[in-house]
Image (cartoon, rainbow, N blue to C red):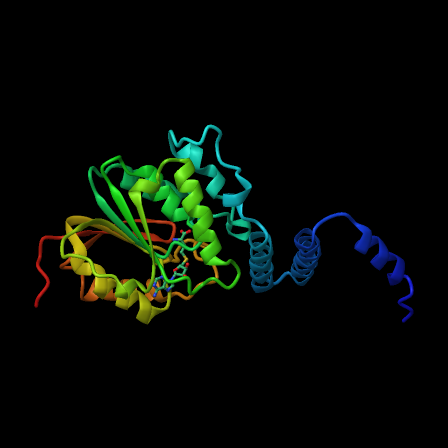
Length: 281
Ligand SMILES: C[S@@+](CC[C@H](N)C(=O)[O-])C[C@H]1O[C@@H](n2cnc3c(N)ncnc32)[C@H](O)[C@@H]1O
């Protein structure tokens, strides 16, 4: 096959006055579109899901809305509607927060209902859930956010943390948040000191189990324990991550139900409330 026609195209491409990142983005968009067309031609649901994943992967790789400043002006969160910049419309183009809208709204309302509370999250990734929780809590409440940056393959999570710190400062929320870089089980927390714990770290079964057992005693009686990606009864509620949290719900039912009462499921988010039954020593 003669490829001579590629030379002028390559010259035009080289002369196009856009940066390398944008060029990479353009190329990746074309690749994504090709995947989608093939998915449609094949009429294979698995293929479509993969295509959607790649669409998500490519679009999120080159987008950092924390930096782009698509947040409200003036930078004040008066209600949930001022947080829409953290989201996109579906998993395939998910934004900064790796949460579905209904899950995020539920978390926002629950965190906002607490007073003078101590919250903790395991896994902040790009900082979407961190910002959401920080915006929801009242002035007297604080959030401890732990992430070991282990999933910083697509995104540089150190850089994301810097963007997150800046945006928290802009919104004057930085005083409420403690961003810890480290392993979730390396953090020491006092017994019965936490009002709400959001577990969204490593999604493999053993890791979810480890997180739960390391943190369970930190929850106050009446405190809230939430697992993300822990229920897959709604189609596409969980992305491409392992289903360890879904499997761990069996343990919660069979051995932990004395200590935690399951109260609500929203999307893949499962909400438990700590009972008053003490843990055996
Ligand atoms: C699914 S993402 C969190 C998404 C975030 N909560 C949100 O809603 O936008 C999982 C995060 O957990 C972190 N992680 C994985 N294993 C961890 C561990 N053992 N300790 C702390 N963080 C961990 C990863 O680096 C990643 O950023």
